[in-house]
Image 1 (cartoon, rainbow, N blue to C red):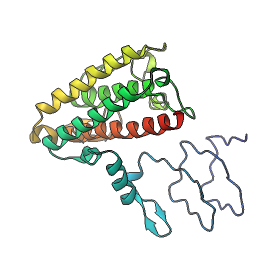
Image 2: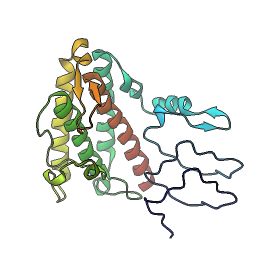
Image 3: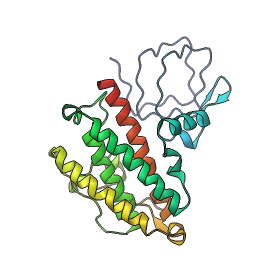
Length: 243
C-alpha cells in the first residue's frame, strides 16, 4: 500500500487518466477540487463541515439535500441550529433520547469495537464528555480546568499546544464511561433549563485558546448539539457495518 506523506502538497495539480480506485483520504484538503468525466461509483465522502460549504454534483449543490435527508433520518437534528432557549432544550431532549436508544441497542461485545480505525462507541461517548467539558464547563462556565480525565481527546490536540497529560491512558470500563457521560448530559440539561435569551447572547472565549475567536453562549451550546448528532451518525454507521 502506498502512503502519501501529510507533508506533500498537490495544490493546483492536474491528474489525468489516474487511478485512485480504493484509495482512502483522511484529513486532506479537497476544497475546490474539480472532478470531470470520472468514474465515481461507490465514492464515499464524509465531511463533518460539509453543511458550512457546498458540494456540487452534476451542477447541483447537494448540501441542502443531504441536510434534509439527515434531518429525516435523525428527528430533532434540525434543532441543532436553534436560536431560542426553548428550541435548544427541545433539541437536547431529542439527541439525548436518540443516544439512549443507540446505547441500549448495542450488544456488550460491540461497545469497544471499531471500524477502519474510527472511534468505538465507548470512545465516542468519552469524546462527547470532552466536548461537553470544553464547550459548557470551559467556554460557557469559565472553569479553569474543565476536563474529566476520562475524556477522549482528538488526535490534533497536541498541535495546538493542548496538555493531554490530564487524560487517562488506560481503558476505563464501559460502566465508568456511562456514569460520567450521564453526569455531563445532566449538566447540559440543567444549564438549558435555566437558560434565557439574554444569556445565550453573552460572549465567551473559545475553549481552545485560539486568539480572536469569540462565540456566544448560544454558539457554544449549538456546537455541543452538532457534536452529539454528528457522532451519533458515525456510531450508527459503524455499528451497522459491524452488524
